[in-house]
Image (cartoon, rainbow, N blue to C red):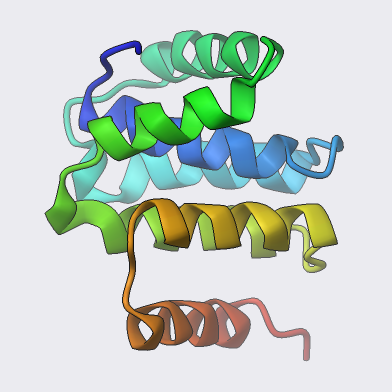
Length: 136
């Protein structure tokens, strides 16, 4: 299993979410960049690193059992104190194009199971995303 930093593991969450429905939208890609630029957890992590990390993630996803490998990398790379953050950034990307596909919902389910997240924490994160991305 590949060793990654916590920032890289969080990027793996976002890239995998964006790729889940086989349609990387401009909104999703823009949102990934915005989160990397603004969230404190990405302090010291640059856009240059983002491109390299996204390419590594995509390459792994294209391997046999790639999704299982990605989930293992995320589990190892994201410390327990950031498990909710990992789920939150995944939810942000799922909601970014204002419509969540079944494949994205499935990946969120796999992610919360992999990170053993509390159901109330998951519900709060999802509710928050719905409130932020609600159309007028």
